[in-house]
Length: 127
Image (cartoon, rainbow, N blue to C red; front, side):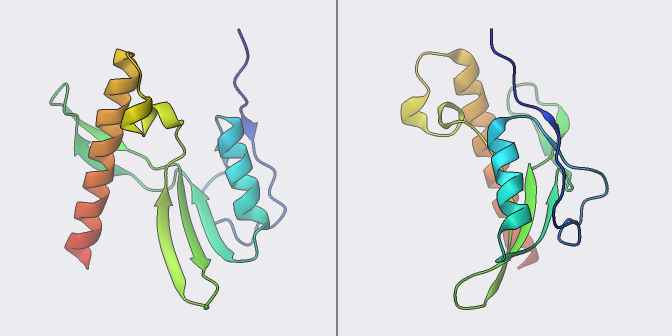
């Protein structure tokens, strides 16, 4: 069984990182995203696991906390600034046509969908 890529990310541009502690990656995808955030000139600020969003789990009914993987501030090619929350997930947790027969993948899909709806609600409520 293979090991998951995980560890502390070494910042090359620490002035861009606005998180409270050293970023920790839990997959090679998160590591690649951190490297892109740190080195891309269009990304002006970023943080890893810096925001906590309360929500109700649709399976258990219990209230819990959703922590998006990344918060980024970037400038598009026209110079307009944008702020986004980013979640790094494998396709079999995010695309319905790639879930297969796995109950775990289906559960991840539902929770991820709910988290996205919660984020949209929060953003629309503040707009």
